[in-house]
Picture (spheres, rainbow, N blue to C red):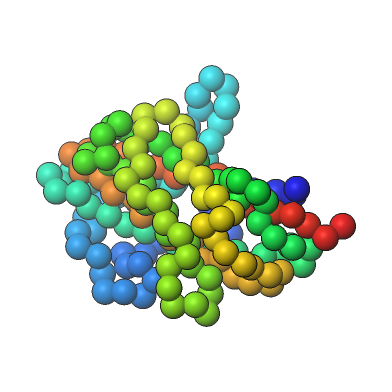
Length: 166
């Protein structure tokens, strides 16, 4: 198994108010920033959204990742891992959603929604949810950060685990 990690600011990532070119999602009154959190002497860079509105507000981080030339298949089990943290442990106050697409394919490949935890945690996508991929395919990831009432939502490192051709 081999792994590639992306730490914020992810190469080529952008902020966007819509999911994969769809119309703008509902409410986008959020403050967006980059920062660093140090917990138990472990530093994590992160993207953050915060909103003072009473109703959940959202914004996306979109990135594209080209699978490397030595990619054969996704690693068994946790193929894609995304670190996140929310200020509230209740998803109605702040949470993170993850959406995965394959470039050139119209349908959603995998998603994981309403993730909320006041400690740094991991959203995990199993290889069985991803289907078949090849070297050079492009993974499109959309991370939706939703927040209200001044609670933050943060995302950190993304890890891709795969079987490689050595």
